[in-house]
Structure formats: structure tokens, C-alpha cells
Length: 154
Image 1 (tube, rainbow, N blue to C red):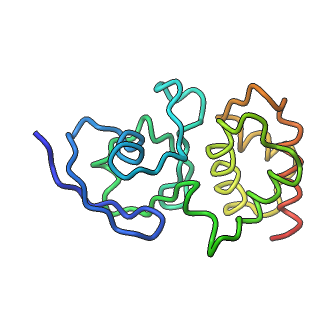
Image 2 (image 1 turned 180 degrees about the vertical axis):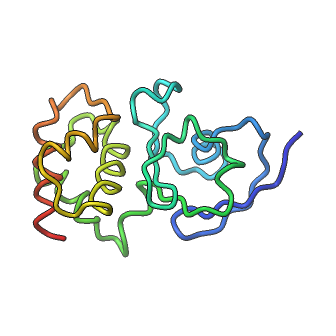
């Protein structure tokens, strides 16, 4: 039986009907049309579905949508403001940290959570902060460079 829930995503309130078993990832993509969080493993092993909930990196494939009510949800779509990329997004572009792009939204949001908590991390702390996100294209070097470059801007 579906329930009406209210989610605050990227500063906007959405009301939608969901079955209690539906994940936040399913609702973001299917109900709200926010496709930045990617569906891949559905096991919480790859990080492509990462979003921020109350500023913390969360795997949306393992989070029930109904449990996300009353919380601030940020997806990759919510980072750019007034048509301007967030500095972290821009650095991913500038440093060639985007190859196929599939892991990029989750990687950026994991890095943002890290930088919000620790604006001046060491390279090892960056590696640890993004360790839950798999990338099969870049070898991580350019991703780490992009995150470290952002630390000089914030």
C-alpha cells in the first residue's frame, strides 16, 4: 500500500506516493526525475548512488525513502547554483577527473561531505573519504587532484 511522503531535496519540497519498501534511489530517479544518483550494484558496494542527507554521504540504494522524511537531501543536481558549477564540480572538469562520468555524481558528493567536515584534508584523508566510491576509468589520481585543488579554493 502506497503512502504519501514529503521529501526536501535540493531545497525544494516534493510530495509523492511510495510503497514503504522503495529506496530513496528509486524515488529520486523514478518519482522525482532526479537521475544524477546512479543505480549500479544495489548492494552499497560501489557508491554511484551517493547523496547527502543532512550533509553526510549516504548510499541511497540502501536508504528507504520513508526514512528520509524531515531531512535535507542533496543530489548532484543541487550543487550548481544559478547555472554555475560548484567549485568541486568545476575542478573535476578542469582536472580531467571525469571519464565515462558514471561514478562522478557519487564521487563528488562523497568528496563534498569530506570537505564540509574537513576543508583541508591530506591526500590520505581524501583517499579515505572517497574510498566507498568505485571508478573503473580514471585510476583515482585525477579525482584526488581535483579534490585537493578544491581545498585551495575553500
